[in-house]
Image 1: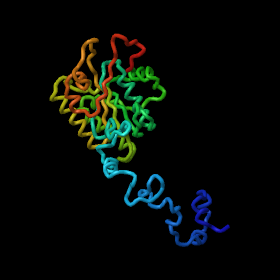
Image 2: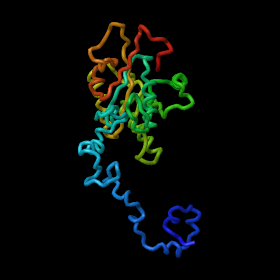
Image 3: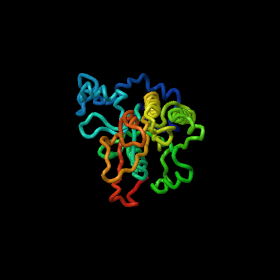
Image 4: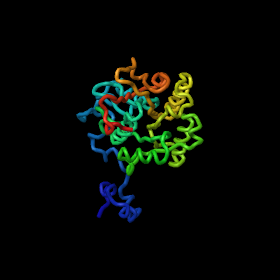
Length: 284
């Protein structure tokens, strides 16, 4: 049987190894452009209807193209409808705040799992980014009970627990060590988590009420996020409020200093109505 290009590119590895040099040489010079159907030439210049445009990505405006390649607009959750900005941008620090038991962890893990599968979460399309949870506010058995309570004991999220030495270090130093250790284990700087969820960041701070201290810590984390082009999402506590107590701005509810919100990009505020909440309604 005469060897053809079509047969050559569809044969199995075993068939390929059985070919002789004469059979391979019989194919002669190959014009690879002829192997591609005409309607598939110049794909970047194709409109949605398949016709050729006069510029790259002809269906999009210059502004849309610029945003698509600008790392400042690399969101973990996409925009709503025709909006431009999404949530949890890479290169920034973000907060999920709420009182103990309000459901911060449950919300964060549900969001991260949904976006990993590129599903829609609260109307926003997920990016499909890999993530890592830094669980520094739970002991071994406490963490196992928490995962069991969330139905994740047999299918836990990817996570690490910092060492004692890392817990005594600044958060940005410890997180960088964890990420670099992951790169060394993979044997490559490529791949790895694009999102780091830090559980209980406010408990990793020497003085969560000191504005200057919190401000410096948040700035260091934001710099790490920019350097490694990752999204750092941190859960932080919030003091419980009486029914009639409110804050002028929900962003300022985080426990301790208002510097948390001032240094963060996306801030998700989770509250529980203490007058109507049932024990089974509470999350983690």
